[in-house]
Image: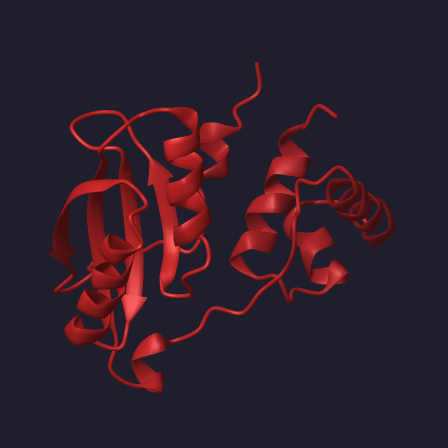
Amino acid sequence: MKLDKIDIRILSELQKNGRITNVELAELVHLSPSPCLMRVKKLQAEGYITGYSAQIDIAKLGQSLTVFTEITLRNHRQHDFARFLAAVEKIDSVIECHLVSGGYDYLVKFMTSGISDYQAIMERLIEMEIGIDKYFTFVILKSPIVKPHFPLDTIAAED
């Protein structure tokens, strides 16, 4: 399915407000409600829309710590990567894991209740013998810019 500008606008509006009514969405993207709803259903069926969720104010829930960790594996065979990912995927505190190019293998984002919780997780990972050679920890002090939406207009530009 090739997306047009209206599809991109629909996706853009829905990622800003997933609870918007179809009538409001149709008005924002300059369609009548029926064709708008048909487009939304097609975007869902084609897998462009994978779900809807609420944005949570984590600070209101209590103390939390966000940590980025650069992880380098000892070996770089396919099964080394698979073994590492299988272990990390089971840790609820891991909220993102990225295979990256450069001086290390993975950039992992953790959210924990505090530094001791994070350190306990890292100690368990090391003890599991899943191939971690070294890791570097970056504690997030403040996040002045966090955007809950993607820049769809720039990444989904039409040809």
